[in-house]
Length: 117
Length: 115
Image (tube, rainbow over all chains, first blue to last red; front, side):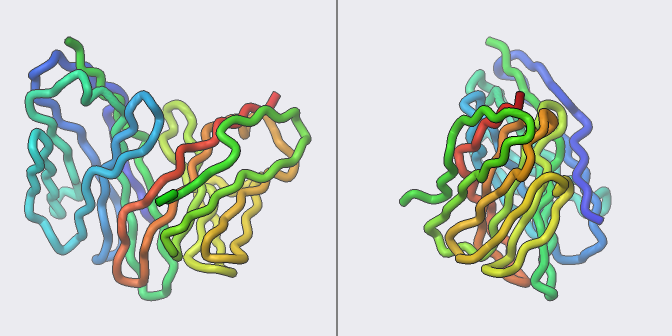
């Protein structure tokens, strides 16, 4: 069965510090997708990144970077030089692609990041 | 460019009342789903659909019904509301097939309170 674990419930950092949000997943499939979403205080869910199981290259987008390691079933998210605007709840999600046509997206419980000025 | 539209934004129900949360998308997405968000529980999948006429249960389906008569609409029905259903509900859709899952597009949510 699919499972996504975000063990960090809440993290507080001071502005300009680097912070890493952890995500560990479980799946039986060899083909799957991993996602990160951001939910700012306004409540909407904003897509950040998608990674498929065949692409283990790390990705960097500005101050954001993602480290995908299949060997440890982890897909961690690092914010460099954090800013107050990064304060939000961050969700990791997993979706399995299936030839049977059934698939679903499962989310972790989220990590609340507070960046203090 | 409406994306995913959820109505209503807020709703207060009394225990035992029924209601339908509406969700519509204009992106021709086959995959649609409903989540509830509760403090400390993240986003939990209620029901999902991979196309018109096809629905399936998620992690927390009890107390909710869905149907998918068109590609565009995926309503969520509460037949007899209970206080435990107080939550924020999100509808989401994506372009997905057997081999490819695009990111989910979310609606803005419905905040439901059951007294």
